[in-house]
Image (cartoon, rainbow, N blue to C red; front, top):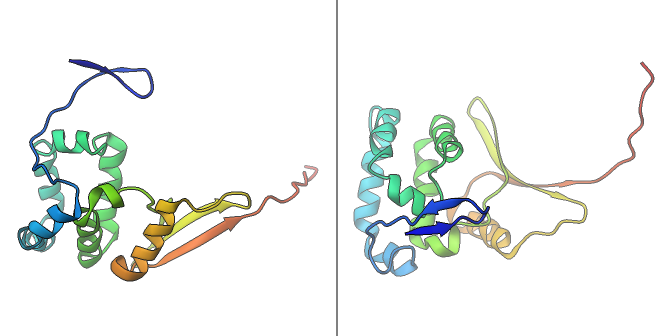
Length: 164
């Protein structure tokens, strides 16, 4: 069956098997022990890069369903694995599993890092306001994720051109 893509491109309907309660808080609670054990094993793997590559193909349909299948998302995930400590990766992975449909939006715009130092940043112009999803993420970051975070407000200034 063909379906119209949001950008007026043609695409195929993606089917993948998942439990009826997938993405809900009930799913996260019901599968908590098994998911935590799986994440713990993944994050202590000797070669997490190899494991990441190994699971790319088997996870393809689920990643398409979750809109996390494009090369850009895959490269972002690779970068996160190389930059963030395992315990932070665990919290990041666990957070959406606990209630995916409520938590997949609102993430900050940027991850800034140098060596072992990093923080997440949400960037807003002087006229821009935080969405409800962004406000929820900021509250949840304080309560659950506990990652370094900054809200950056960018103000327009007059631009002066300098003579060469």
